[in-house]
Length: 102
Image 1 (spheres, rainbow, N blue to C red):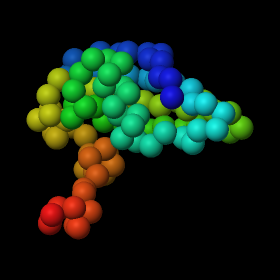
Image 2 (spheres, one colour):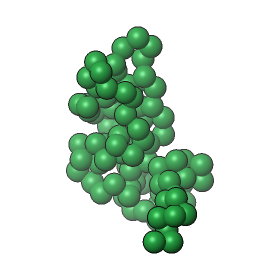
Image 3 (cartoon, helix red, strand yellow):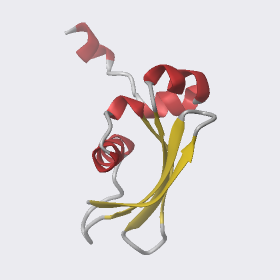
Image 4 (tube, one colour):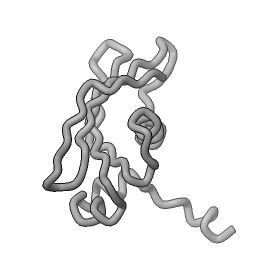
């Protein structure tokens, strides 16, 4: 999986960067999952994972290229205020109950 940042727009009102990215995966690889993509974007932008929220990802039909958009916030608190609940849940999935009890 290779990630390339194609756009980086500063949104000072919402205290975040809106990052456009393209992922090229190998011919035998599947579309990357949201958590792997979140880690890759965080590494590319050089921030912690907990301030990165993947908004959308779409794989182009018949190719191994995925385009997407992520929001990178200045703080976790700002993300809690701005991001909708369903986006926060997608980007921070709960651990299964079996693991939580162990």
